[in-house]
Length: 459
Image (cartoon, rainbow, N blue to C red; front, top):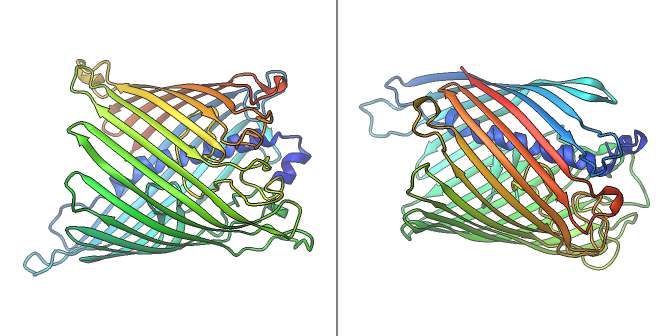
């Protein structure tokens, strides 16, 4: 993918931006679908079948996604139709039986069509699907819950690892604690996080996780986890003078809960060890990196139902890395202090950086300004402010245009409007504007703007 982008003259920063935006859209889909479609229906029949269709129409527009107003945008406008059809089959125990345990099979198919302006190497139209999005079996043998198949796997808050995979998860629970173990593999045709691998090597990673939670404190939870990532895919063709392996271990823990009646908090810290391949070499470096994410949310009991929130996130960086995800232009000597992860953290609409060599401060408010109107009661307006800095001023960040040895990456403000017009019809508008700071050279320090409008229907 990277090689093709270089041949076509596509700036790596613009390619990274497109990838980040696609991941953010996918996370939004998961957040919208999972709680609803994975809910168990309360019916009396032993075999319960439920199904539905979720359709999203999304128009998005980028302006100066490469931070250069004098250069034509790689991604100008896109229009996508994303269709997810799902079905759940639940086997219930007899009503007069001693057990109320249930077993279920969940299936979700995905089909997506995208029109682009301007067109890329494949033209202006791309069709992806239909293919299996989710397919897993859940067996309830309380206090054990077993889930096997293709689904979303993760540990902690989902920073170190949160992604679709083929695997198995076993959860044991009690009134005071829970223990979860998982084994998962990246999807067969999933793009590699490292875009510098020859021929865009498909991701071939195994994840082994163990997570424990203590639930004995009312309104508070403590947890810790271990995660081992094993890179076992080979590049094609094999290069004798270079290696692209990245094998890491993550040790994390956190606390979450309510400090007051309406104040929620979450704090997580993750340490990373392991070995990474050095740029243009067969040598390897020790990984010594870490990250943290802390957030608070306050629901004010006031008219318009305002919610105020703040967040600070940090991911360590490496001074001699110019690219935070790739082996090429990655670490060249000594320890690799760059925090590289396989999860997700929302970081805004326009810049959408990864939490690698990054410090982020966020503040925002959400409210319902038209709550007195019955047909606009759930109309929500939110506004967010972001500030970004480098951890290591000499190192690069996810946007490879930020090449100056300066910590100040820039700031961004986002506005979101959501309107559930009907129970099965929802509209949303997202706007974000990123203003580069001193980490960007004068040739690429123009503001980046992002706008999207979407309409979602469910059946």
